[in-house]
Length: 361
Image 1 (cartoon, rainbow, N blue to C red):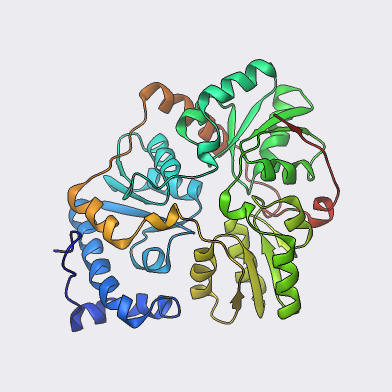
Image 2: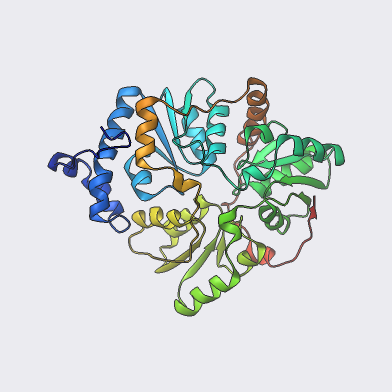
């Protein structure tokens, strides 16, 4: 068995069965590594059939997971929605803990597993439900919009959730619905500042950050442009505002993926987590993907080995208190029920270059 000890055998049959996956990951996985990965991929996919399980693979998973065992791939909310629609009895979250909680919120009757309980998130851990209650006391009557990259406890104190793709739309909807010109948008400070530049709604923000996107600098982009003058620079809105100002496009992970697929640039720089570029590249072989990128240490706690172990032992189940679960679901569902945005999810870079103050809590 592969349960943390002797590796499974790499046979000719396994090599043939995983040939299509190897073709997608061969630029990011060495042949030596593949001899260890391929048998695990086959076993994981067998276990999924045997146990009626599905794997949600976030965009930041390594290519062997993303292309090898992911039944649904994408951003955290899209994965949770797919889990809810799936007939699978067991959902394995190849991502971080708040994502598993969101899957549980939308699929309360399913068993949600996470391969490593320590797969956390600097942004999600920056705020608690108690913090949100205090914020609401300080700003009574102001609607609370909470990024989906938060715990269920925080979502339960929220009026409506948002993603990086629809944050502007949700903020403007909340302001109109509550009849106010001010909205609380938490916990990502940089997302809030970038949203503030896209709308006339005044934003109250929290000083939370994604440690991956916070590390990028304008100098990183300048260095890339000097070395590869024709490269197009795409930034995630969790980055500081000056990163968006220096970029050619800004949008969610899905928007960046769509941009590359539609435009097919010769060279592109994705200012986000490293594995995103590796996974998009498999579907865009004509595009050269250039650094810089930053690795998420939390996402990288998820491996084929611990996905296999989670399925074998059905271990590390993620649960959410019933009261929290119901209130968190209301906030997520309220967002899901909004009409889709009229325009593709992107951040207007002309607006992004105008300074707009936020009120930082």
